[in-house]
Length: 337
Image (cartoon, rainbow, N blue to C red; front, side, top):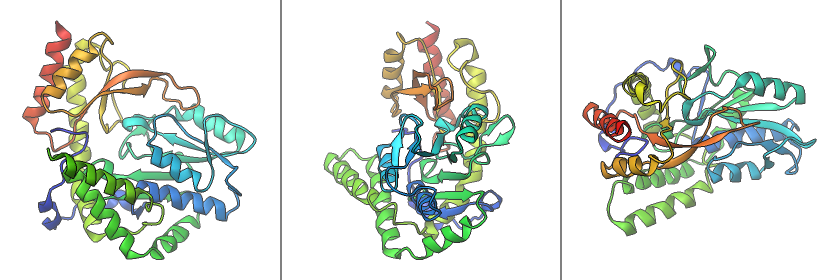
């Protein structure tokens, strides 16, 4: 089965190759992306920017419900601005940048804290400026990109935030990290199994661990090593495949809504004619590709979104070149007829 992220492999744990860590120089690694969000909200509470749970954070559609749950421990996730709004969470969906000009104008006018959610945007940019450099805070979720147990990251423009985050992480019990990472590993392995009870048990175990992500802030040495081993090759291959995919499918008109440059995609969201979608989806699933019909914001603006139906195309390095060519051939065959 081909998912949107790579299969976990035990042999990765014993690869001691360490590429440059330049990417991480400004990022504090955390136990997960949700943990990173928890640290930010705790900090805002400490600074009295968020004073109680009636304070609101503007959130986009289609985030995982555990993200909304994490916010609710400190504030109220809202869809519209009100006098209680204190922050806005900007989600760069699938690695494609939001319209930061419009969002920054709005946030500055309303004096809102900007939290950039770069869970899907490791190395994308907006008008030549890297995503993750626009907001007051930035969240990363590296384990969404490749297997590295559960691992996230956080950074901020507030000068005292790094020390606060470092101390908050230091106080976290190590046992929570072991529990969280074990649950993540078992779940990832189960998704490639055909044993239903194993899948169900692993899913329950993972869901149980999510309740602790806001406290399980430490990272394991294995998780950090896997991140450093994989990130550079992952970024390079996804960029290369994205450009190749755009070139090969240009005549089909299924990527006209996507940027041509400055994107490292989490997945490639294509938009064929809606009447063709069920047939193409069936073709892809028959090849063992785990995909579906999802909503993608054409406006790239959580303040005024325009969601349309799209189909995910995976492009990670666990897919061989031959398999990726097969995906493109399937798309061409179905949509050219």
